[in-house]
Image (cartoon, rainbow, N blue to C red; front, top):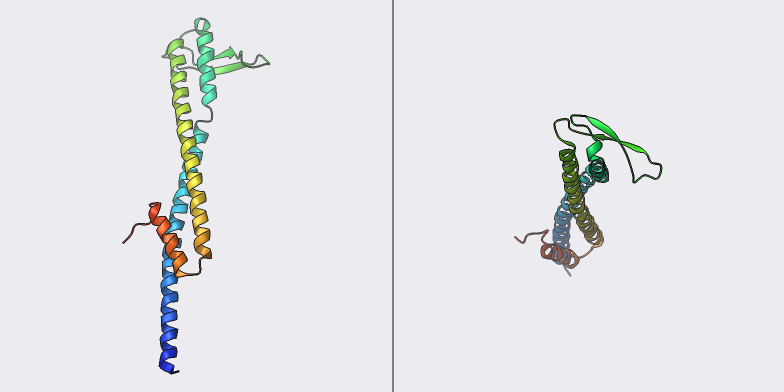
Amino acid sequence: PSISAVLDIFYSTKDRYERQKQRKSDLVKLIGNNIERCNRKLAIWQEAIRNVSDRESLRLYGELITANIYSIPKNVRSISLLNYYSENEDYVVVPLEEDLTPQENAQKYFKKYAKAKSTYEYTNKQLKETISELEYLESVMLVLENSTTLQEINEVRQELMEQGYYKAK
């Protein structure tokens, strides 16, 4: 009916679009930061798992020392012992600390094994949780990117608030 009504409709639509765009970009940034944090955590957990990947050899060293404890001389840096777990009857070179007795060396390897095993179990659990969180965040990001209305964006924001990612202001 009038140019004034047209301008009102135009500017209110433009304002609504800008607010929707701003809310969406804030949530995209928030989710992106959390995805980046999850990726950093994944790298840390994967590195920790790689660091304890030799845990079974620590147990093997402890068992081989224990099985051959009376034949191991004191004050040696390493000793070659028959690996009775191997089908080929291979010999394994076991590094030892010279200032420790064979029994103390075996205990040292068993302690290292126990620590590596518990580290592996904890890290594996954390890795699974981080992967689950990352999958969740990526799915929320996809929903947000496909949202077209302010109501959909607000629903995503509400879900992020319920999950503890977004703090109400």
